[in-house]
Length: 381
Image 1: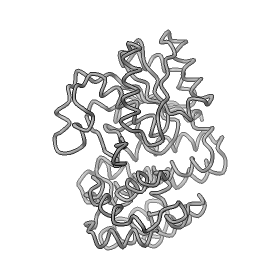
Image 2 (image 1 turned 120 degrees about the vertical axis):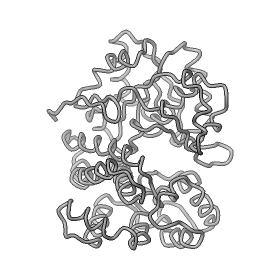
Image 3 (image 1 turned 45 degrees about the vertical axis):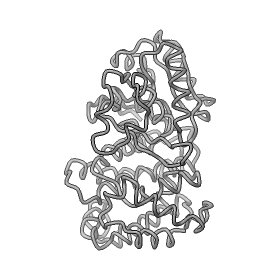
Image 4 (image 1 turned 30 degrees about the vertical axis):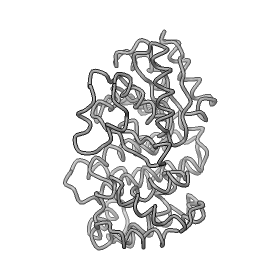
């Protein structure tokens, strides 16, 4: 991919193949001289992490690494990361990886100078104002997947290890100072992860687009993000070395997370508790429930989805859009039902309660109730 670009929306972006070489420059721009690279256990052993550590070392930044991060990061991972950060005398974080590495890295930077427990900063009302903004270290975010968009997020999802409930921790200053989006870092993703993360990006764009709240900028970003996913996800699934399509998917992921400032909905309200209780892949879980959520929301979004279908080059109808979603899911080998991911009806009461309590539920275009949420889970399981 020959395209290379620098943007400052929603934050400073270094986009293009090979841009990981600018890691030293990005750290300098963020004011770091001794960063800690935070990633997950699986990624730490792969060549892409070595490339990043080499770029750090070449810039005179050392090669400090913390990788004790679970697929669904917990406060225990955070405590261990903070211990490593403080013991190493670090002055910033390179959050590196998929959603788990990015989320935990951002929280290490956020909590590095706080005195209250992390749960005091949950995304409820103005709880974020409890944080000391001067105690937040700078962040450079480097995604290695194209899905969560956490590199442009102002929040992280941390799982409480005792209750298994996922909590969203928010602060405006958790937004990375610089993002390096290098599609070459995503080439090693296996097809199943390419599919799951790409479908997560689609769910972000689709739910933001469908959300009833007023945010025309997010609306436009979500619509174009969907186009990029539908056009490029099949390409990267078929050929993981397609750098151009990989680049478009990285942008689509960032667009999805930028757009969902407008809100999410039932897909995420369901996927969060399912992931917390059963350890399922978040993006793939969103993809499994996507058709049933679209059906439930049809009465509220039919015209809007028809307009999206027309923009995407299909017949101007809800059914045309729905059929394309179904076809994409089949091409990505998405399980037809949650039961195929090990989810049963034995804990449905807990799933329903957790979904209704999830912050994403408030953005669904049809109000989520105990009755319709239970019916939704039953249909999806």
